[in-house]
Image 1 (cartoon, helix red, strand yellow):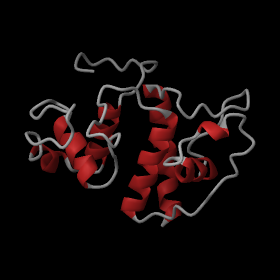
Image 2: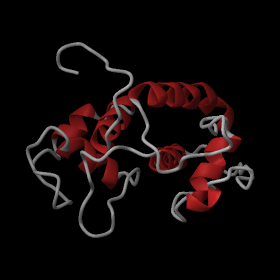
Image 3: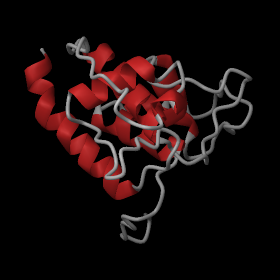
Length: 162
């Protein structure tokens, strides 16, 4: 946060994840160029999140809800995180062919169809784990600390996916 604090138990928003993904990829200057255009009705041009969301969308890393909205302040869910990481891995040319059997999770049927391949890949890659009670909680919030751990696993595993 701007005051230097981290707040690990706070939920990560969709906009915060876009900023993280774009800056990690080293596109900070390119993102600045897209600050004043917007492709989503709920992402104001000139706002702090616009350049990151717009560029992440242009690169195919994120998508909106299909109705012209992105939900920048909505909490990032586990299935959304998996889908974004999956698209990012595809973008980087990583091997995303691994698929875990998700039927052992009692809430596997709650995973959205758009996220099912991504979730199966993320589990098979060891990026995301189920919860202790055999649930996956695909629509559960991702905290900033959880996202940091998942991104660390992603970075450590990326070399193996080439």
